[in-house]
Image 1 (cartoon, rainbow, N blue to C red):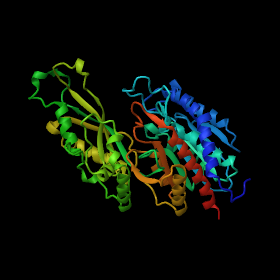
Image 2: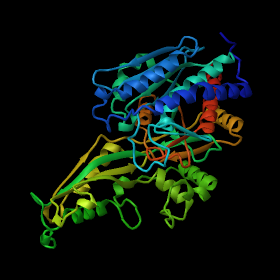
Image 3: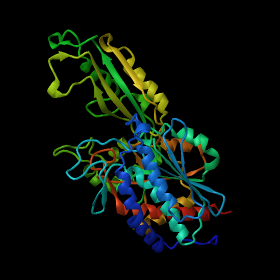
Image 4: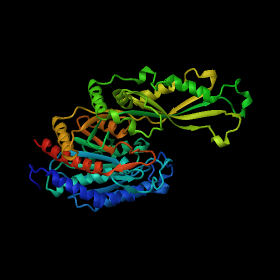
Length: 477
């Protein structure tokens, strides 16, 4: 057992992590990208197809080969649930750290450049292209490598549990059952490290301070029992026009602002201050972070407003539609029905289930012309706002970022949702949280040409190792 005072030498730690990424992690990630391990929400036949099992087994086999003292590797399968990978590493004191990632992926999406594809790993300079490597297939490999890097130097760490699910992109619907079933083995972590977040640039360690909630659902409008000749238009209101009216109840289409007061929250002063710091750091580059068509502008000229709009204010997107034929097949018909997939991002502290009920009331109350209007919400995802950082963790993150990135860390809200975080926040209210990731400018998670920025992943891995070492020193009596 290493001495309690042992601390890793940062230069040796970094060299170990760089070699691990070059020799072991990248080849495994390329194999992982080749697996179309679509989340169950996008592959209803996932059990028959077996791709999630392939992805989990790849990571399990890789982990089993690592010389980490006392490592226990298990693929856990509850009946009817997606598989979960559980790695347990004994520590040098009783405290527990929980590290999290996922292996399921979003679907293919169109628009990939020539030579690229969702299931085709391609290395171009610092980037590994392909679906899922950065979001966030790398997490299991990076987490175990951070622990291995400490052990290679004899630096002590707490007991570590690495939990890797395969249902995150579908809202982590299976995770509560696993958390209940494995509660005794997970214990009560003092520190939770999540590697499924984003970064505002590739020059600093970025920490997520909040995550938005999410309500998805189908909004449908029916006006006819069957389609009829469009000569009836004008007399019979079109389902599309009624749909537009309903959406305008929720969103001001001119500004994009959600107009329902019950879906707004007061933004905490500390988050306002951090948003200003983020805007100062990357505000000039915000437009370049998105693949805008020529001449397209962002929703505001105020960088701080844009940061808050993307992290603390509700925002509507329409992500799919039914009842609309392709243009080439669209005849002169007044269609009987139009339906859209509504995706409403919620402020981090707003109750997501309550928000789903508000949406149903907004859409279904007093339908225009007496049309048949239905809103069916999926299981909402609760947002999350991080607890204050402990002094040791604040200092550790600052030192790790300055050591491995050369600049201090940044703290920012995240526009996406990680249901796991609110779940863990409720279960372990005394835990500290490190929510970080590698999805920076242009990485385009969920979209075409998704990539992992390899140097950032190396640095994040090294930073996690530093935090684990500092946690051990802070956790000792």
